[in-house]
Length: 239
Image: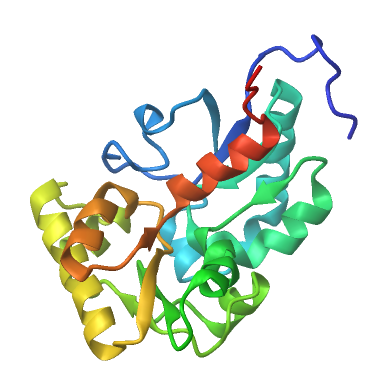
């Protein structure tokens, strides 16, 4: 595909396009799918049928072609970089990057090697995820994360899993935050040498500040990652 030339795309001044799962829950400010989260314009495309169960507990590869088609539509619209609304799409990182004419950052997990390179000797990154039982060595290997990286997830019966798994439940921000903080505390209690926490789930950033306050660790998430990504696509001018 040929990228739109200057002035030829139907939408201008776009940097990031977001491939959205097919969900129906409330997205809080700070969530990838809340437009108010972003300090710059973003464009969204929903991949129909790609719901959380299909992506987290199923086979994302089944939806590769629809994800490529949605991403190409975003590129034709004028975006210069692609991300997604689910960290488990790390499994499609190589395939999407190979198929698209713009850079792709499918998952917050791509940050793990960089975070570990910055940590003091003897410390490692720990991953906080939507579903620990579903985050497999294949997901980690797809984006260069060490297989022995500590992982902690939200409990299967948690409100967080019900709401963001698209299984119903009232989105109670206070209860969601309590569950997230409890999981983060468990992560660092089980692995005291975790020097930084990486949030896999794109629904976790609304709670990143609370995680940092509760654990005393730096917290990295998809929003900070994509802000960094977008800055590379359009560097700030200091003239």
